[in-house]
Amino acid sequence: MALSDPSLLLSWAKLQDIDIHKSIQIKSTPQAGLGIFYSGSDPLVTSEDEEPSTLMSVPKKVILTAENIRTFALSYGTTLQELLKSGDEEETLSQRATILRFLLFSLHQFEAPKLQKIARASNCYAAYLDFMPSPLSRQSDDAQKLLTALSLSDSLPPPPTFWTPGQISKTVGTSLYSPLAAKVRLLSSEFEQFSSQWQDVFEKIDGACENDVEISFEEYVRADWLVASRLMELPMGDELNIGIIPLIDFANHSTPCHINAQYEITDDAVKLVSLPGRVAPDDELLISYGPSKGSSEILFTYGFLIDSEDAGRESVKMRVRDGGVLQLVYGRPPVAEFVVSDGEVTWECEFLWLLCVTEEDGFEVSVAQQVEGPPDVDISIRGRMLSGVRGQEAVEAMKEEYGNDGKMRDVLELRRVLILERWVSGWMEDLARAEIREFDEEDQHITELAEDDTKGGGTEKDMVDGVIETLRQREERVYLLVLQELEKSKQKLAKSEAVMAYLAAQNEEPEGEDEQTPELTEADELR
Ligand SMILES: C[S@@+](CC[C@H](N)C(=O)[O-])C[C@H]1O[C@@H](n2cnc3c(N)ncnc32)[C@H](O)[C@@H]1O
Image 1 (cartoon, helix red, strand yellow):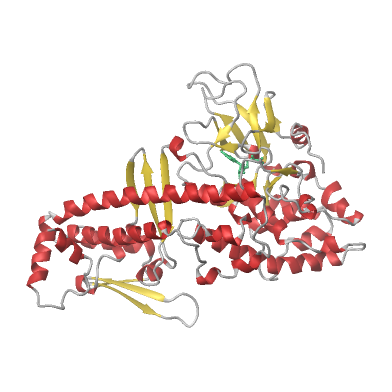
Image 2 (cartoon, helix red, strand yellow; image 1 turned 90 degrees about the vertical axis):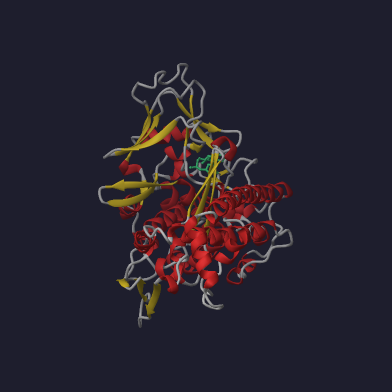
């Protein structure tokens, strides 16, 4: 398929009642695929005090939400409606799955004229969907080339869900590995169920060919990436909807100091507005995909590495592997978050409160296994029983009880510092391991997903390796700064009167009685 002129998108938009500022253009960027540009001859709004200008306004009826897609499907006859049913009769398809299936249906290259007609000729989104990018078109396989009209920029590596098992295994130790392996697991199990539903729907169509009744895993992964990288949250009343906003979804990301536009959600439209004083002639309009997202999160969802130096900020979110108290109280292991912003290191690990007290301090967690569903968890704090209290609520109760206890406060803080230091050192070691990385046991099946681990050209492979290496170095640096900060806290806390009194009392106790507070042995050495 020949590459189309992106300005056609604007003509399509006008037909859909999308309002566009007269000086807006959609064109290629050097590094990020297509982007939105302001081509006027004057700065859009010169003064910070002036009202922002509306650059695009997309009516809600045009947004690709699950609700709009279902309404649209009504005019299609039964084919699309069948596809939008969950495999399980009792369940309604999730919003994400509805949008994903609509994209699969619209982007699949059907051969039967009847199917081409319903998926393309009567699809009012077809002209817009022709501009959806794909990391697949750069691959040599002709069948895959057919899947797409536009490829991602040559300077962008394919997004992580397209990486080969060998490449995914190189992320072991980084915060990307666990969500990526989980996502690949989810996609492959969803695909197994969905591909047979697709077959059931299309083999009933007169004249359907083999290519029509088969959908490939690559198509599924591509549609998932399009949804993930273009989806926006749309709070509407009490409900949280999600949707792809045609045209506004061509806005690329930048760091807070370089953004010049943002979304605005009104009752009947989603708008792209300029930030006053920030848009000059020929500027690309740049928004933020989330100012607090770290390299790994942006890479996971959008497939590129942010310029964290320019952002003046880096963060790492690591899920804590703990099958014990944390798992029980949180339902799933919580996430430790570390942020380095303008040289200052902070972290968010409040759940450590649940690990820094023991039975000896009056903290107990008991579990009553239910016949069905999650276990009932009871927490007891110094004899006070808290039934069914979970997550942050449990942490708050601990803080209230022990955080106000002058004798224990510093002791517990030191314990938290020591636990965190042990974890962060462990994560640092995982990152530094240079030998060939092994998949975790539960992810072994990923190796079976791709028959050919050599797919993708040499440059593409180098790009992916380069991205993983940069991520590894960034996370190592964050951990190093965290360890330095923890060391300072340790030194300070070891001088605290409460800690010294506690340790002295422990030393007086007969041997064997302090087995539940091993973390303080190290503090002892500090003195
Ligand atoms: C919402 S779309 C933006 C439109 C996209 N450029 C296109 O051609 O369709 C998000 C995708 O754009 C690309 N992108 C956005 N900002 C980028 C940036 N700062 N650097 C590199 N790629 C970027 C990534 O491929 C990302 O997944």
